[in-house]
Image 1 (cartoon, rainbow, N blue to C red):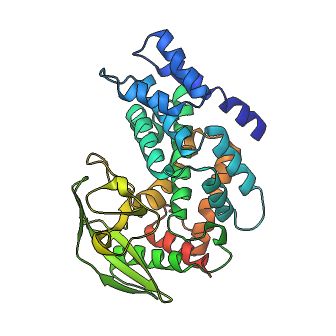
Image 2: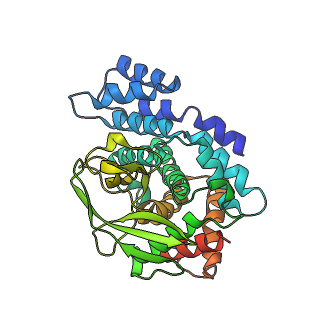
Image 3: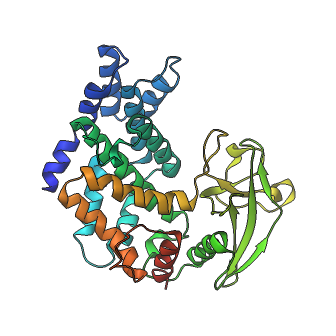
Length: 340
């Protein structure tokens, strides 16, 4: 069954472009498809995003495929990771997270977010509309969108820990602090950590202000950014940067002179982009992935994905609940249980 899925997935992008492309010349579509086949993702992005004309559905689909490719994922690779780990033994979700991270690019979280947005611009609510009838091409698109969501969820977990390979095996101070920060953002409690608040951090390039907190656990302190929304959420960050220049992003915080103003750096750098938060990529994306795949994936893939979600429900004693929607509290408890 899995071999058949993988074989089918190899021709999906070509089918999508021919079925959904509605605004380009045939030669241009073939050129785009060739670039995708050759993994020239930057070429596809430069060609289509720099085009002054409105994007067709086919253009948006091609861009979604390019950004997924830049993130390190294809439909075949994600299904392969899902199948390998769901059919294994032990903690399948943790194993899936580790394998997904191995395949991902440094900017995978943001690239997958862009891919999801392009898919959504074409699909709108079709995938979740139980009354609608999906065409073959739309079903393929919903499958891609669902897998983009779950890939983003798993890669995002790696941003919460200092050692993804230790996930589920040994305690990780940063993961513990990350869970405390999520809990603090959610309800103001700090759990086993201590939390101190800093002055708000305003990143001038994105014109966005965040709450800044330091979370200390086991003598180690980590900075987190929180949205100013109510309820708040921790922001997915990557490295450190000054408030006025995202291009000065570094992997280790600088602490002397002017450089003392470095903060953890948000993944999102554009004023037009919504903050990529833990709520968005750990809770919403995981729920969305299972909802999207419920209507379009094969029974094998749906079963594999549900196994991952079930692990989180079991950790919260919710395995018999009729409502299977995950909450921030569910994710927090699951991460706690896998950090001992």
